[in-house]
Length: 372
Ligand code: PLP
Image 1 (tube, rainbow, N blue to C red):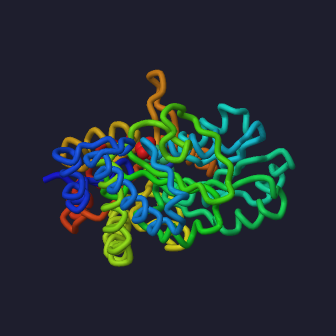
Image 2 (cartoon, helix red, strand yellow):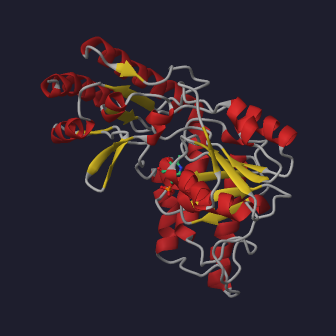
Image 3 (cartoon, helix red, strand yellow):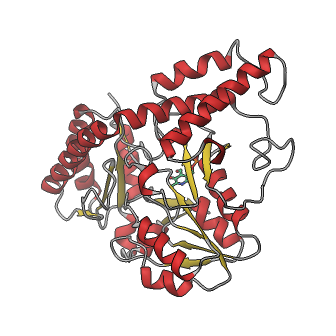
């Protein structure tokens, strides 16, 4: 048996998404930019999907721009909305945002030890030349949820020329993004984080936001993102959005129970374990369990867990051969040793009691064996 506890990395394709996609990978192969019947059928599918995506994100269909990933949606939001001005983001953003902001010499604002954006530092960063502020709705490593409505109010008050982007890639499976991000000008999602296919995302570009395209060509997506549409991917994403929204409250309740059983069990059986962030539903998504075992090397732990069928991930990256601690944990003030001994167990729609049983059986033993 395999316990897949890496749903923040990617999720299994939902059956509804697969069923919706199959015709567009076979008979309905038209290019939606054409004008004949086969093309028109593909175009109709894209426009139907656009309506579904818009409903799930709380915007007008004309405000949806289909992209090739969440990364592309984030890049388009920041690079497309900066118009020569300054970009601002938090220190715990996904690299799709952080590296885009750094690429154009933007400002990076710190977070509190709980991982919440430091609102005083944000205010200080909002000079009149700021054009885009990007603050994620939910974090991919520790699951912390940002007070995005408060952020929007601050930006509108201090830097009215700036637009607000939120990376809702990790939020969408768990949170009512349509409501929470209603005040944001730009909202990014990625299909493969909620049971859709990989390689497709969307950016909400709310009127009257001005966006310069990054990809030039045939002028698709009303000149905002050229390139022949990934019809099957877009249709699959729409089906996954519909299924996610319809089942979200029930999934959140069920997964919260599983996640809490996992964390309570680990706290009981692993001495010295530290849980990252409070399990408050208003500040942490249901699917995230992030723990630290100071003194244990996460990379070694992951290898041991993999051998016994637990798929998890560490909040560290391997850069030029050296294990680097997570930028998110360091920004939250977690000491290096704790950051290097961190484990992210991320649950999803398909997570079961059996997954939790296996994790609780093997993790305490693996940690004990790795401890000096
Ligand atoms: N933003 C966040 C918060 C993510 O977690 C991810 C993926 O891990 C991305 C953006 C990038 O999305 P994609 O994998 O579609 O490029």
